[in-house]
Length: 154
Length: 297
Image (cartoon, rainbow over all chains, first blue to last red; front, side, top):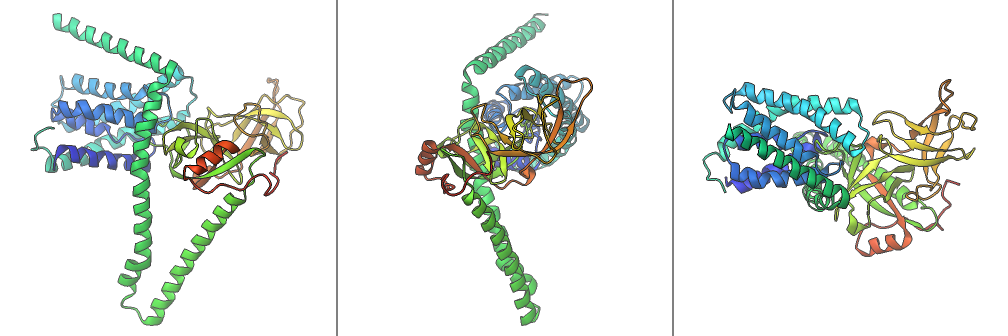
């Protein structure tokens, strides 16, 4: 399948996943796969689109999602000094990081933006993020390898 | 060494750019608008047709495939009975929907305000959805501007937080950031109603210790914030406690609307704006103030 069509279809599916599981980020595993596959040109145009999408469907002022994905990319780059990028353990650690990052980032930004958050729900969303990330990555990676890997990047 | 300095320089530059962008947006709101008009709009484009397809598929399944596949081997009477049972269930569902829509249509907005119907298409979506909110299928084209009050015939739901062209996000009254100035319907005691989070009661703040408030009293909007029309029912008082250390009463209340199961809502807007929104081909309006007196006041 052509990469553009693949990612368009995934974006639509991810919106529905996020509708079904409130608070979950369904684009994070896709970012990691693009980094693992070194599809940096695709990442360069997909990431701003996904940031805009997340900011649009969210309820906090603009800015949080830039740091959200920046944190993911930085953790991935730093983690590659220790792990092979497709190592399952590494993906598990990324999931744990995303759970913690979710709690820290949103708590910090809420202070900056003058918002009062529900700590219980924030904690639950963080746990959900940490657990769902490796599962989402595994499912998406399996599909990606079958459908897209050998297609030249657009 | 040079590369380390380079990395630090790049990080500092990125941080500077981010903070500049953040501060510029905080002052102008340009990026928030852009995200609402693109990201939120895309969500509407994806969810609305998908929901329509899902509804149609379920209906098709129930009406034809289910009956044909599962009842083929049964005798004619059994099949007929099942068909009638299914039809009855559908009719009951339709009757319930008609009842809900009739209540929406019979809702009499406060004087000089009009109601435009909207459908809830999603609840919280994505990691950035930190507030208790729902997404509705009306945007600026349908008259939903930021701070437009949202209600049902039972009471206040919240207000529009962000608005795209055809989709909006509504902040619910149960959110901790929601503040609604209210009055007691019986004793006219005023306070500020704020949420304590989903599944928890609402709290009325700044009610003096000697103010009269009864358990069971209905709270209505006072109109002081100039966002909500005066007299809209909001919540029912469920507990009044006197504190030894505070200057104010602890007053807890419950929303009059069943917020987790919202399906349809009304956007309340000044009559001129509502007429303009209806002219743009939106949902039928609720009747004007002459239909029936509002519950409040």
